[in-house]
Length: 512
Figure (cartoon, helix red, strand yellow):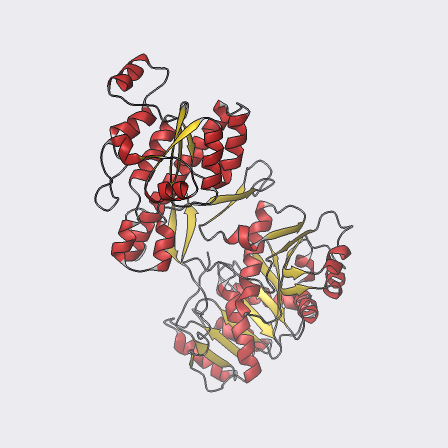
């Protein structure tokens, strides 16, 4: 008879799993709460204390840390010396170990009581998982309840081969690595403001992309423990590529920055080329497209709401590669059914949302940079300091809010011009801020868009008055920027000379 050790915090389907193992001629060894659960279901179990000859000690802190447990797991079945030593010490083999760990993350989300959190750091569980994974050729290690039925089926068909055991082994080491990383990051967040001597970035694969940024590169999407992508991103049509995901991320971040307002953002190569908030999503899309219909071709459209048939028909007039919306109606899906290259995704909520990660990181050669995540707070513009003689009107303030949020999520150096709740010009990724301003003005002229009466935002301060002078030439009436330049007085003077309302937020939003 084979022997299985079951000790789980997540008790989903464990009773059925144990019953199936008994039917496959396993006897069950168990611990604590798991043993109680199995016995209450009428399943005979060998209590771990009876196996080791020691009671569970120190409020359950020590129960499986014993040679009769780890020897039973770790001895090699094809090693004569190991077999002799196991026999000499009365160690009976454990052939299957089913363990998942104390709910550390769930405890930290439920309470701030550090003593309780400490008690939910598993010690014996990771040790058993690692022991079993190390000896995977002889021991089946099960850490995922979703595997139970598959393992039972393979055992019953005698098809649990070495490749499958290797997969279980890798999954087990991933399980303990993720657990330890979670604990280390939590402790650094609690005691070192999140910036300890080590920082661990752990992700779970959502799906493979067709390839990376280019066809010769492999790529996959991974998500953090919040499971944001698997819970909030659903495919309706097509397959998301690596570049699609980065563009979707940029578009959704901007469109979702405005709550439940009917915002539409169009993105190309990670930067916005169109944005608007009008009374309807259809009107928002039309206005967003006016900003740069050339760049919008083959781009990504983020719709902060429900994509209906009328909007689908309008979008379908040009080729866009990706549409992501809160939801898409069946009638809208039919509009695109003959378009082979278009990709449709939803967040399964009425409005778009983002994960709001606490930290942001950027890869550099040989390592990565870590920082707190950035965002424009809802009161940032409200708390901005008016430094000019002229005040912005109510409509101009609304345009400034849009311009500021779009600028904060656009590659620096950037400037964003907004008029009547629609972006009319944008200059981004420039080495000079005045060049960004001139580039935006030039693009607007090419598109036949008037900037007269528009509002302007810059994600960082204007180092010279030249950008204000350029803005005044095309009729900009209000500007928001962080301020902080040694030449702020010159910038303010230019605003006053040109009767422009100027606000300093005191907060920079570089995006490099």
